[in-house]
Length: 365
Image 1: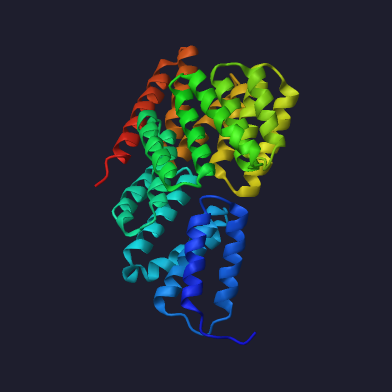
Image 2: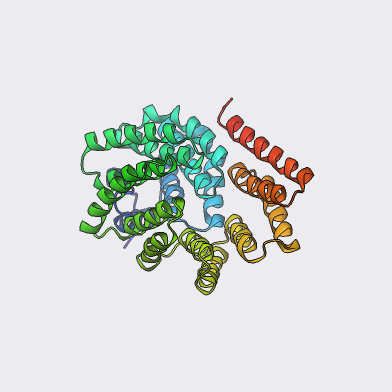
């Protein structure tokens, strides 16, 4: 086909479809992105506005589909070179996708700052489902920051807006899963289970495999939090077999097997989880697996202390304060149990310091 000047209205319609479909169906999203790419290839000229919109969609698509960090960083740098000319709508999406990427990398404080900056430009996006999506993402972030009541408030806002928009059943089911996670942390297990089963009913009817896997995982997490390892293993094993395997599921499977002295099964889950982390390049999760192994298989040895010290130092360097908080209190308890009170005090203090850093990260300039 001969190159031609792109039909702007045709392209803008595809852009609009991409933004809407990204909340509903990842496979359809990939097809629309393919159509956009083909349309772009057939043109000999793109004005600045269309070019900016196209690069933004490429960036958002790379974040959503978990493309390589190299590609995501390259697209981000390209956008930043022309950031001053971006319209407010594109400024919103740029900050929103940056925040989502930081969230995926466990950089929660940085993600929160970017989400708050994005909120200033939310007015420029006319589709009300975007406000719902913003609150949905914020709910997930606040859950990760242990701000459960704030998270519930955000997910309730998201649910209400998604209901008003209509045709957003997948996102409504996803809201149920976040609500369930918060209920678990507040020890409201019956309510959590109700939300999970509501979401599961929809996911199974529509064969939404990714959500089915997530719900199975969350049910396993819920039983793990209640020290019901056998029930947790049942659901986590279903999650591992259904849809895409995820290192977080194998982390919990490993831990719950170790808890009840299923060493062989625990090591199998450990090896699978580590392999997935190595494939994805997730250094933070590799540290967690190393510390999990040390906790159950190298307890009361120099290797245990060494791995915990290395892990905590890594999380401090990466400013992953929620992980510093989690593991410093474990190490403080360990030293207290062994009457090494000087070291115990050091890690109790680090626990308090990490909690303070988390709070300060939420107070934005």
